[in-house]
Length: 368
Image (tube, rainbow, N blue to C red):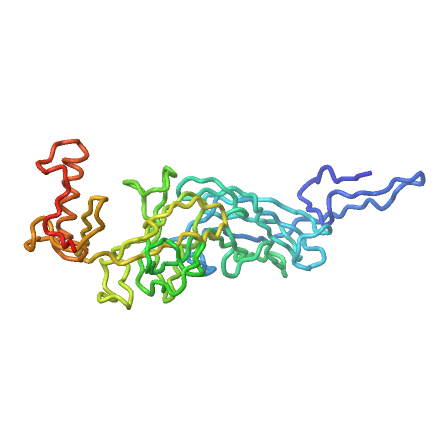
C-alpha cells in the first residue's frame, strides 16, 4: 500500500519523502514515518538566462528566460544527483526577468533543477523547450548542487546560463572542373586535388521567414561567417527554425593557381550560392558546402556551328575583321555574350523577327 503525507500543516517543511510504499500485515505497520521541520530563514536563488556569449556571467545586454520551472530538492545523501531518496521541497517559475527564489530553508544540502521541458520561444516566434533546443554554458550544471551552511544565509549565485544549441556549416572549395562535386570532406566528395578556399570566404546567414529556401526582401541577416585556412565555416548557437546560407561569391578570393590569386570578384558558385536549411533543436547541420570556379574575367568563347559542320576557328560575323573570334577567348566575345542576353529577352523570347538569314553562314570560318 501507499502512504502519503496529504497535508502539511502550518509552515513546516518535510525532511523525508512525502510518499512511502509499505507492505501491510495483520500485525500492522509502524514504519510509515514522515519527518517535518520548522521553516528556516535561508534563501536560494537566482536567475535563468540566455548566456549569448557563453561566459557564465549575466551581462547587462543579456536577458532572463521567463516561465521556466525550477525545483528544489533535499539532497539526502549529498551525492549531487536527484535520486529516489531526495525530497522535492519547493517549485518555482521564473519571472519576466528569469528570476526564481526558494525561501524558508534550514542549513542542509540541496539540489536546484531546471525542468528541461520548460517552454522557451525563439526571437522569431518558434516555441520549443530548454532541453530540446538549448544547453548549459560555462559554470552551469543541471541540477546545481547548493549547500546552506548557516541559518539566515542568502545564496544568490545558483544561476543557470543557457544558449541555443544548433549550428550550420561546413566547407568551401575550389571546384576546378566545375562539376559540383567536391573533394573528400564534402558531402559526396570524390574529386582529388581540388583545394579548399582559404581565409577570406564570406557567408551570410538569413532567417527564412516563409520557409521557401530562398532569400526574400525583408528577411533579416542573422549572422556573418568567414572561412578558415582549410575552408571551414560555422554558424553556431542557433535556435531551431528555417535559414538560408548564402555564400557571397564575389567575396571569394581567387585561388593561388589563378593570375588573379587572392583577388575578389572573379569567382562564381558551381553548386549554387545558397542553401536552405530547416534546423531542428540542438542540430549540427554540416551539409551546407559550396564549390567555386573562376569566371571568364571579362572574356568569352564563341562556338558557331550548324550541326552539319564541327565547330571551326575563324572570325564572326565578318571574315578576318570579326570582331569576334571563334573557339578563342576574347573581350569582344564577352561583349557579344552580353548583347545576346538583351536579344534573347527582348527579341527571341517574345517571338519578334530578326533581319538575319535562316541558313548558317560559313563566312569567316577556317574550312580545311
